[in-house]
Amino acid sequence: MSEAACVTTTGDRTRTICWEDPSVTALGARGRSGLEFLQAIVDGDLPPAPIMNTLGAQLESVASGTAVFTLTPAECHYNPIGSVHGGVYATLLDSAAACAVHSMLPAGVAYTTLDLAVRFIAGITVETGLVRCTGTVTHLGRRTALAEAVLTSHSGKLLATATSHCLIINP
Figure 1 (spheres, rainbow, N blue to C red):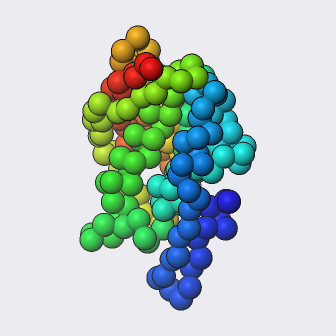
Figure 2 (figure 1 turned 45 degrees about the vertical axis):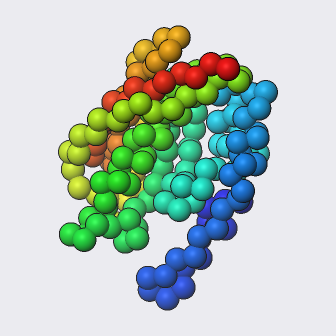
Figure 3 (figure 1 turned 60 degrees about the horizontal axis):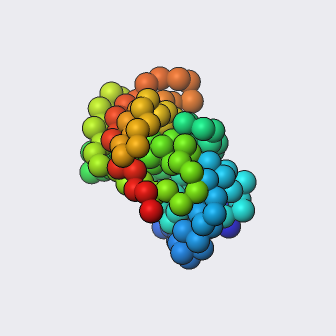
């Protein structure tokens, strides 16, 4: 189910969001490397995580050590001062960094974010248009990984950066 099929806008400021059972996605990880699993989400063979439908974001592409998410900002992402809430930035940055790590893990190995350090550089509004968040692994060890993520506008303007440490969980 695509994001477009899951979001219905009625009136000026009403959204209805749907998502698929997250256990379907989790079960889809079984027997697949992290890269194979994430590619199945990109290809539409597995549904995205419900948070992606909630935000209207999508995993655009994945390669070993890299993950790219996109989002077109909307008013529903706004904070009380009229710009995209920092939690939306953080969600995109965390997702890109963590999925970059996941893309390098073999089947059966999991991960979780240990910490996320975010640096907000520029504001985002609906006028910003499509934003892209790219995560890249900078270190992959046996027990931890380090990844960086950058959030940019469609014109390439830097909006935010993050670093993330992930714990690697072996079975």
